[in-house]
Structure formats: C-alpha cells, structure tokens
Length: 181
Ligand SMILES: [Zn+2]
Image (cartoon, rainbow, N blue to C red; front, side, top):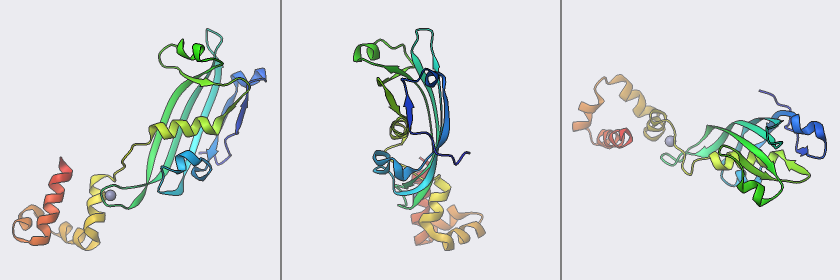
C-alpha cells in the first residue's frame, strides 16, 4: 500500500495522459460526498487508475479502489472498519450521445479537458457502499452480549441447553437464532 497521495487531476490535453498510470491514496475526510455516508473519518483509500486507448480510440480508465472505511453496525451500533473494494472501466466521452453508444462494461466519464481523479474514486466508493453495514455475526454477538457473557458462553459447551432455563440467555439464544437466518 502506498501512502503517496493519488494525483488529483488527469489532464486530457496532454497526449501522454491517455496512457498514464496513477496510484496513490486519498483520505476519506477529503471526499465530502463519501464522508456524508461514513460514521467517522478513520480509514484509508488506495486507488490504481491506468489509462489506455481502446480499438475505437476512446480513452479508457481501468479503476481499482481498495478501501477501509468507518461505518456503524446497524445491529449493535458500534463503529467499525469495513473493507470496500470497487473496480470498473470508464470511457472518456465528450457528449451524451457518445456516452449512450458505449459498449457494455464501459461507464462514461463526461470530460473535455480534465478528469478529477479523486471524484472518480469517490464515485466508485459511493456506488459500492452498502446502505446498511453489519459486523460479522460472531463479532456482533460478542459486542451485543459483552465480554462477560461471551466468557460465560465460551466456558459452557452447550449454551443452547442453558438458554432453556436461564432468562438472560434466552434472549441471547433468540438473538443467535435471528442472526442465523
Ligand atoms: Zn455489530
């Protein structure tokens, strides 16, 4: 992982840029639209963007984003780091007509002179982020029940039997059943 910042701008007026390779990091706090979907600024975003010309002479950006972002678990409400990856191929177009004519698998980027690479990365993540995030089930149960209950459950090889008789554990058993489905 590189800590080098991702360059901000791809200048389409420079011919070399149409075959350029960009790699670097962006901070979640620097992407305002994405930030509005996050629970905290902690996290990292690493992006690789390589440009090339396709057979039709279109400039195509292959975008790969690997991120870890702060989201709130909708089950236990704790903030946690969620990995988020996104990959896509973008074709630079100048008109809506060109955009409409793109083959399947290519998404249009409307631009004439410059492309804001940070905005490209932000778009990828905004599209990829799920509406609701949840911990892994096991982790979430541990958060919900607390370390004490977790330790008790670990000592007990048959927590389901205990749940038959023990009030608080009934709730836990019910929760586990809910999560299993
Ligand atoms: Zn949770």
